[in-house]
Amino acid sequence: MSSSKTVFDVAIDTLNEAGRLGKINPRALQILQAPKRINAFRIPLKLDNGSFEVFQAYRVHYCDAMGPFRDGTRIRPELTLEEIKALGIFMTIKHCVADIPAGGAKGGIQADLRTLTERDKECLIRAFVRNLEPKGPWVDVPGADIGTGEQVMSWMLDEYEQITGAHCPAAINDKPAILGGSLGGEAATGLGVFLVLQAAARDMGLEINNAAAAVQGFGQVGSELASLLYETGCRVIAVSDVYGGIFEEKGLNIPALKDHVQKTGSVADFPGATTLSNDQVLEAEVDILIPAAVHDVIHADNAANIKARLIVEGANGPVTTEADRILMDNQIIVIPDVVANSGGATVCHFERSQGLSDEYWDLDRVNNTLRKRILAAYTQSRDRAREFNTQSIRFGAWIHALKKLERAMALRGWI
Ligand code: NAD
Image (cartoon, rainbow, N blue to C red; front, side):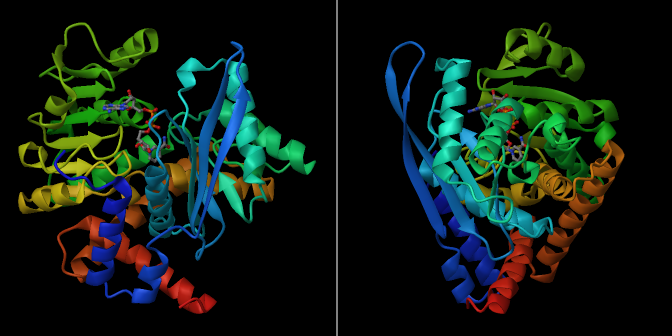
């Protein structure tokens, strides 16, 4: 990658350019240049194997002009504060685009979960919650992200409730349904990416059932999305994960690939498929490309090699600013993360509402409401792009969000 910019620098570039195009009040932009509050702390832990480690952790409260801080917790060994800040501003924008009355936050722990026992993980998570000094659903609601599934969120909820002495399912998101989570939560982001992809393809006159697609990342988001594409008859010809990629011109059998991943832990060595590198998957001869792994994967050095006509961002921040310009020059449509992957945040909103009301929704209600809301987010972002004379739906989405933030800040008397 030629640029030394961090993913947070890229987010701030997008903020400032959208602010310029949308003529947003400079005071609102000034507030959004950095998080409102950063809680950085270290967690000492005596591990089961007798060793001792201190883990760096963060909770970033980015902006709460629209409502209580909300969203995920990421655990990975390479985690940086810059990454958590970027995810915090993405959540601030994403909630606005999805019309959710919530602010943006993100947390994380720098840890390699593969080296920890279940008991080590539980101790680490409970200590993380204690360090947040959690204040409940009207202040800050942590959810899941990479490295934090339903078990982790169950420990978080239990620790919160042990501290406060009261049950409060709305205090933690992404819980299993049996502890007050929402049905449809796990599949929500993949389903949302698919719904937005369908709408964008329709706008371009691209028939998904006759198209070829490549998916980078075959986790919660990528595998769900690949399954939905496969069911429509779309040929998913290239897929990758952290270990590398695979290719099958006729289209991969996605249900069989899911079984293979279940058994082996990777897409690698899928019978009948050719091996590709992760870069080759991104540059494959396809109509649709879905980066659904990590940030900064499409950059100045590979953007010109992308063949897809439509890119739908399952991951957060997969395209750098320079790459975005190259893709735009090449007439490639990019549906940005803050629209495309907002399905998870939207169902988290339903989850919190269910917890607060103690009234739980069936799956049809969750999915139908998600469909309506995410398609509205796409249409409004696309229309804002047209209104402000930019080809970029990313800027359309950010302008749409910034108009709301500007109004909320003005009404609160902040600017
Ligand atoms: P996951 O951990 O379930 O899966 C991640 C996948 O990406 C795995 O297949 C992994 O092997 C692969 N991967 C990791 N590093 C890679 C690399 N360098 N190159 C290629 N592949 C790599 O994660 P997920 O929940 O599916 O999330 C994927 C992306 O979507 C992340 O950027 C996340 O922030 C974003 N996202 C997820 C949700 C959600 O609800 N899960 C919501 C919004 C955004």
